[in-house]
Length: 338
Image 1 (cartoon, rainbow, N blue to C red):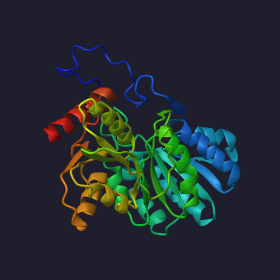
Image 2: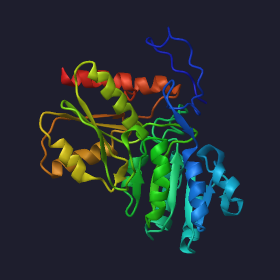
Image 3: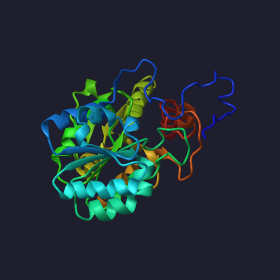
């Protein structure tokens, strides 16, 4: 069961009424789109007859129900059996289908890891594993918080790993990963998903990073929802005459090392990696390894989740507590520059 965290800084504020499980990460007044993954997959299914949707009792909670309504004959509900789900997806792929598999990230990466590793990745099968509640996007505590999923999936041979930012990128990601022949693990934002990248004339490209804005003092390298936060931070720090560049890195593996090195080697900037993931084994360590191997000596910091089991509670409180909210991240960067 979840519970609300009470701290000295939050006790005086009005009680948060948002459900820890279904809370949107969108800010107040921010534009959203409903179920971008489900709609994009249904559109894909109209053009690709071999696409099937599979889930482990979570069709409604991963937006796969939209595909199920459009193509009930190509939808498979496997029950609460994630290992069976992955094994069955491998079987479908062997027979020429292209399974899109959904569950929560914790259940895929912790409960069914061996089945993905042996049945899907080792044979380099064309299975797309799309998982909701990545990182700290639920307040239900360690049982549902997938704070180490990227580390696990980065280590799996043949696996492509993606952390999309918003509804725009999810819609573009679906046909892109369908065109890629091989296993993919993608984080999923479900429900009412923020719209962020539309103003940047953005187009998702597998394996490519994109510089969304430039700045002279700080380079933030980010993925997933932390790109949204980084853009908010950049706007806030403009008031302090601090220029913040944002390099969005949606593909964690394979990593766009050329873009990272090109931007990081521009002198005079603090390099900050921001991720909704443990500081162990995710984008931050991937970037640090890239810099070290290339001999790029730059000031380097990480914004990410601690190497710990995280608390349960309301998401705004948790994001403040663990330093991944825009306000706390902005204050942190100010401190590093002082």
